[in-house]
Length: 364
Image (cartoon, rainbow, N blue to C red; front, side, top):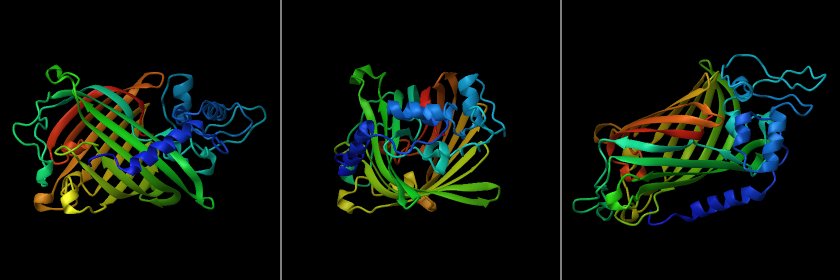
């Protein structure tokens, strides 16, 4: 798109408001969930609940408590309870999805708390052997003419991703409305000949209505059902402008140590003459699957995306990520991507990428 739409402005304003608003009805959550809360007072209250400093049973994941108190990340089936004198209640561990989406009543933190969304990371080295020097599109106005850009195959990449609940209990005690914002940037840090430009930055505001679910299928528990509206663009002018709008469904499943999110979407049509990338769904897909596995304090992620079409419209991508403890909340981070659409400007460009760096927040 030529510029960020009004949707992005609305989402950004929502996050600014979140800095000053107080949370409602704080309840226990896991410690990693506490680290993502921006408000000092609410974050402290969350830690008090999570560490058993109030006379209430605390629902926590075993691995979070061990990682905080002893540096160990071993995960088992034991249950955690409050250490308050005389308290004999035993609380169930929080669901994996509870730690990010506050699904169950005991994990609710109220509204206007900034939380982590997608991974937050910095990769000083992000490499490819096939840099996209001449971006193109079926729309002639969005094709780079001539020899194209002079880009280095090694650059840096970083991502910021946050969300906040703006309405808890949309339908009585059912359904929460969240807004999210993700920004990822590719920086030609090592390209001194071109004054180290930012090659690409993608902006992605969205709104999601999320429901807590409880059903079982093939050994998995269905825990989340959501529907949202998503805008993604790079905020540039022609010929480098790219963007699209989608309606996205989210269906979340989990079992011990595993989370799977199914995300089919429908692209909201645009007039052909104004469409920067009319064939984007045939490359960046019509849906994806996100798989996350926690093991001994490490987190492994796999994203699989496909166009759901055959023939010359048969395209897709896969991303594998790995994060591991380094010191405190700082974690090492590695990512491998293969396929189309690593960024919007590369939506129809097939390449392999490898990145290494550090992260502050992971998927779950």
